[in-house]
Length: 442
Image (cartoon, rainbow, N blue to C red; front, side, top):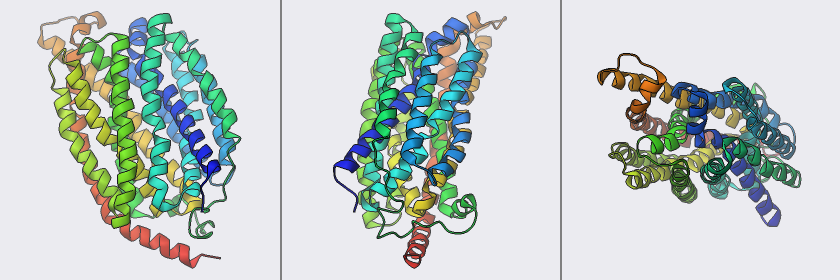
């Protein structure tokens, strides 16, 4: 059974790559306000820079997911992290909206290599009863990278300008690209009982994945969850600055607490809880995710109705909501591996991420930004502003963004229902996979 120093090294490298992934991904939201002010952007345009990344990330992930099922996953990771790090550094040289937009497209293609290859590796390195905890360590790179990006990027930007933050962010990726090449590539199906499931069934890989009912519920859940998570990550720092009067560095520090503390605890506790729950019942992982998302909704609502200037209470409440929302990742990622055979896990994650990012992450920032712009203009007109110009709208942007963010608890309720539906089909799909794997044992 997999284990030992080599497995520990592999997981550490995958964590580091994922941390760099989300550090580079989050620089733009962390520095959104100074970029918006320098170039005179609207919230919709600011959100569109996030959408540029996520659209290419999603579509590039599908062929890269198939490649992860056929080629060396460690080499895919090494090339991917090297490419996106170079493009992140070049983003600091952008001289306008469209140059930065094009560079973020390229970053999205590079980062699309990360999740399918890394989660497929983890599925082969760790047995099912330890898989959610291993995935939670890998996913710990998400809040760690985001928190570090908020803290480090905002501090660098305040001292030397936002362009310097992009240039310096490229350096850790070069180290990770080299470290990935030292990870040993495990045989597919290594962590299962014997070699079962290592052989791919006949037929289209995409059709096989989409023939599993649980995957449909989880794909839809990923779209809704990522809409909310990317709306929060894109506008958390701007919200703190506009509504609660925080300076750039203070907003970065408070955002770091939300993601670093709340997100980190949520991932680790969620992974442990999901593994414990699945030992008691087959739908345990998804019931853990369902309960956590449901419990996050009142905290999210209470955070958004805090009065102006109450930044600490807002941070504590939204930090608690994010803690619970991060339970989703280890629970659902492990649940996908529960119903997908080893030779199709890269493909399954790529399809899941396609919907997660095209319908969720890409729409979350730009959709929230469009709604914020609309509600900002409405508030300005209600206050008697006749000529709606960017300068005239500026005093109303805080209220507009607050009103736009109130859609998130409603979407969270829909997410709860989708996860509960997935928990009803997962036990049957898992039994069907286990029976096929037993029958296909050489």
